[in-house]
Amino acid sequence: MSVALQVLALMLAAVTMGLSLAHALEFPGKRRLSKEQYLIAQRIYYPGFTVGGLAEPAVIVATLALLTLTPWASQRFWLIAGAGMAFLVVQAIFWLMTQPMNTYWLRETELSPSAKNFFALGRADMPRDWTVARDRWERSHLLRAIAAMLGLLLLSVAVAS
Image (tube, rainbow, N blue to C red; front, side):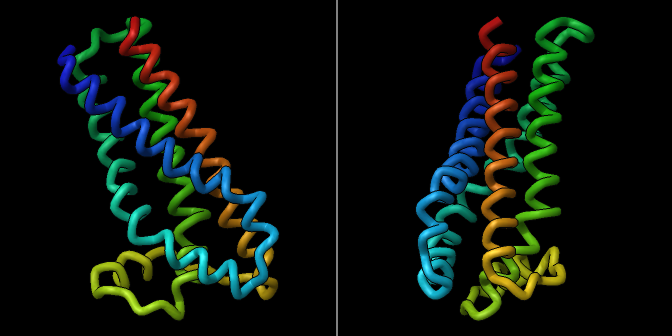
């Protein structure tokens, strides 16, 4: 198995986990913000988190590449397969829970054409109470952080074994 590919997969997994965990750790403090403060805070994160978010599909590709280079039915194979599944769950949560809320938070924000196209994906009916939307978005990141931590853990054990 390629050491360079292992390191790349681990780095992408760490970025994926780190971004989700950062959002999850902000939740207690962000609950204290007024609606106006919260909406301002939401908009300042998107440029950096969007760039970092490129690691999320990349870690799935890297994990799949590692899986193809790993002997079938070995312990390492199943650890990498489990990590890949965890990273797929991270993406599923994003598209089903996080992205629809992104369209809500960014509806009044001036975006570049490419950002506008991306954030237009996944529109959903928005709750009337902004705190319901806030909690849904924040919980999605808690769930993503848990799945990403599991993926990073499984991948780390696979690479170390």
